[in-house]
Amino acid sequence: MIKDAAIRLFAASGYANTSLEEIADAAKFTKGAIYHYFKSKEQLLLEILADIEKRSITKTAEAVALCEGSAIDRFERFNSTQSRWAATYPDDLAILMLTSIESANKKGKVSKRVSKIYENVRKALDAILDRAKADGEIDKSVSTEKFVLTIMAIHDGNMLLWYRSGLEPEVGRILTAAATQMILYRYNELRLH
Image 1 (cartoon, one colour):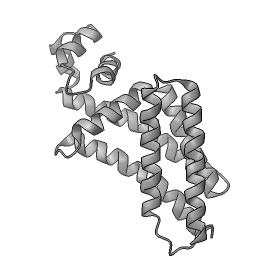
Image 2 (image 1 turned 90 degrees about the vertical axis):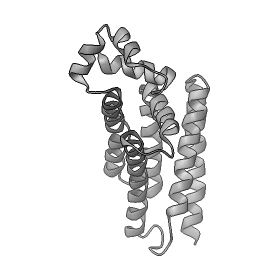
Image 3 (image 1 turned 135 degrees about the vertical axis):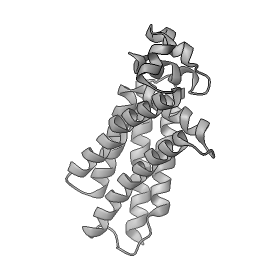
Image 4 (image 1 turned 30 degrees about the horizontal axis):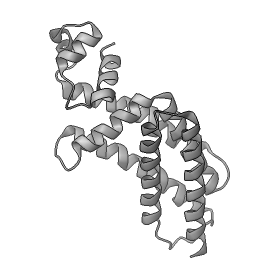
């Protein structure tokens, strides 16, 4: 109940612009009762971010690891699983985007947590490429760092565009298809070198 209220408010206004009093009111708790469960607003956010990571990148990495086929099949699984997460949990997406911006270039637990989430996204993408190298789909000497950064940029940009569309399903489908096409195009460049 407390987390649900905080998720709605953090998604709508951001962490920095949401007070503990607002969360307490929305959850129909007293501020003191919230302190019974969470020692601070920051701890509440950190627990929500951990939940978001489980629903998002942990599930995506598991789905990709179970995917048979080529690297392209695994990238498509990555893309489609992330799209389904965002469609199912749009408030998660808003919180991750807003918190990422609010905590950028700062020190602290929230900044570290957001960085860890993005590092785990990168690791999931690296795992696809490591498997592609092991399977002989791309040469083992090819550097994949720029490719992973490109995919992350496409991913984040598409998620932002979709959110800004008002969560329009057709826009989401178009962006998911476009991301898949761009990943295929960039992946084929890796294979040619």
